[in-house]
Amino acid sequence: MNRVVVMGGCNVGKCSDLQVKTFVCDQTMIIPIRTLALEYPKIVQQRELRTVKRNNVVIPGRVEAKRTEFPIVIFDISKKGCSFSYHDTENITTLKEGDILRVYCRLPGVSDEIGAMAIVRNVKREQKQISVRIQFQDITKTFLTRLMHFLFAIEGFIR
Image (cartoon, rainbow, N blue to C red; front, side, top):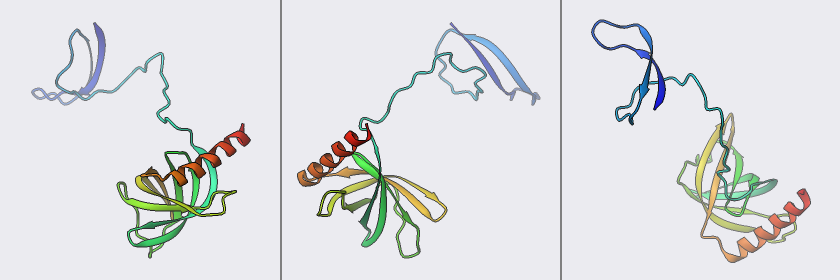
């Protein structure tokens, strides 16, 4: 049995005061009620949600999206995706979650520009700057090989 403390307004009859009620619950509550947690768990478990480590970088690049091309700066990258930012101007179409785009960059130590298709997972606006998180889609072997060489090189350097 669990002790439950509920704080809420009474909507029975003419009662309109804020009330605190304590009761023992020996079964699952089916109807949701408005509650306020007055006590937190003594043990909080933490679990890493990401399966792949992100690496902080500063890599110039460009994006092709919605028949527009614009410059970006990649600020973190992993084998699954990356985050980049760009300046919000009137001639650039704002990206939104679910948009498909093509991202290009020139990794340090690699002479050729590499590119991959990606889907937008998150967009955050901060003043005139837009930060976008993307997940790579349909990665070519060439892209993945060059990216992995770069990631192994910087991880060895950072440690």
